[in-house]
Amino acid sequence: MKTIIISFLALGFALNLTAQKIDINTLNLDQLNLYKARAVKLRNTGLALSLTGAAALGIGVVIFEYADKNSIYSESNITVLGVTSFIFFTCELIGIPLWITGGVRKYKANVGLMRFDTKKDNTMALGLGVTLRF
Image (tube, rainbow, N blue to C red; front, side):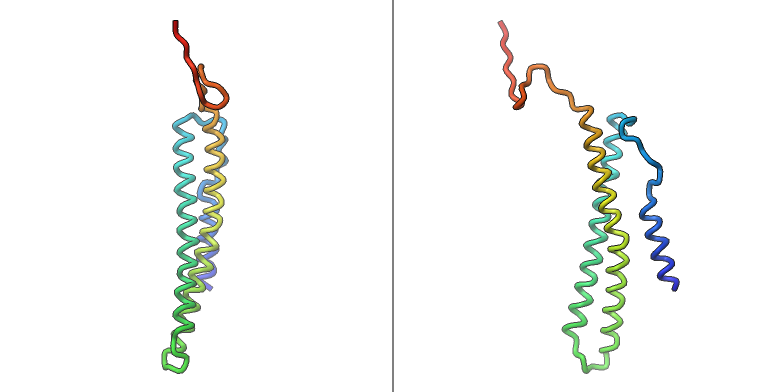
């Protein structure tokens, strides 16, 4: 029961890391770059958690499948599978929302940074420029 409560609390904290709504249009260039860096960090953390959970489940399944079923340790193999399954579900429950949230924030930051992209005076649509001086 304690682990279920702790899991829900961890999920709640993960989903409310930055509960404040940030208006991208009011940020300057430095603030947008910081927002993007934090978004990338959040996305990478979610990805790492998701992959860690998947790896834990894979290790648990391998240990369970290749263990001797008739040995005195067969009950501990089931316990290992249960623990790794719990680690998998916990990591996925926290990692996937972090991954999605970080990706969305990174996209929003990139859209906001497009406002600060200025075109040079002598450029054409393809990015080629010709300057004639007499």
